[in-house]
Figure (cartoon, rainbow, N blue to C red):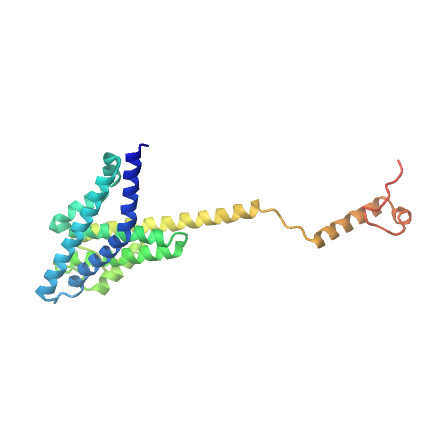
Length: 263
């Protein structure tokens, strides 16, 4: 690797380290300003406009981050291939019916930060990811369904209940989306739920295998009592094989002091 390429890689890694926390904060801000108009339909036009403007600013900053990383990447074609999904997620919400897709980028950004923070803590990571998916899906489906004809998800508590039973793959059927956008949210949530279940099952199986392997590889500890018991058993066995052993050894049955019978 040339000196210039190495320096460029170092700059990319430095940028990712520096931008990780601000991007996470921006994701939380985006989630808040996205949620407020949905949770409060009677919000004043001024606040609604402020929330909309904030989402646009945050989205522009997301674009700026990925463009900076593209500029610093040593292999830009490879970078584009590896981040094609991010680019699609950043582009699609320009279309009004697909604005809920913006939440995918928020989930990905917060999830990456949670993964680093909760590394080695499976329960914390799974709980945080599950709660985030449930909340985001509830907001997205409520946004898509509330004003639709024949909609049955018209309140946040209903949306939260629907999101919870859907991610667990229970699906009672008491609430369900009727719009195309709502069904896409349901599809993503079901895939996420199956993925979480598979992740938890695989991690638990790996943990059990590691524990069993570690126990099998660990040598058994031998105590003084074990040695004494073994010596006593050997002495008893020799006494049975040679009844005159006690007389020749003066009553000592210790195998280390017993005389061997003459050939």
